[in-house]
Length: 110
Image 1 (tube, one colour):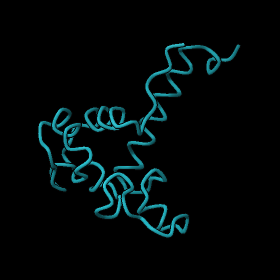
Image 2 (cartoon, rainbow, N blue to C red):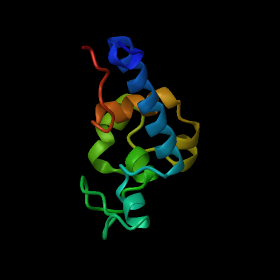
Image 3 (cartoon, rainbow, N blue to C red):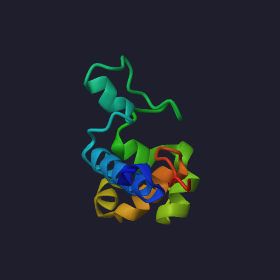
Image 4 (tube, helix red, strand yellow):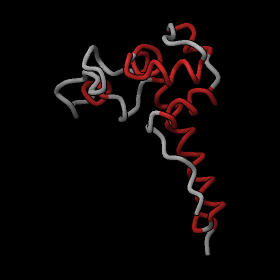
């Protein structure tokens, strides 16, 4: 059986997926973000479906969406984060936040 067929292999794959998603979100080039999907022609509207206030880009998702304010406070210690704070945020905190709001899958325990 190959390494990716083992539990350890799946965890490594999952970890790589998390790093890939983190890099995509931090650059704003992530298909999970509605604003990006709109920019590349996959969506007509980039408005956040969670709050319907503004476009769902990385700053909105990670720093401003009021629907995630409690999760943001628990993860980063603040309800809202500025652009500067986002650029200095610990990548592990960003991953924890994305896991909490369901944007990343939890580790496969099988």
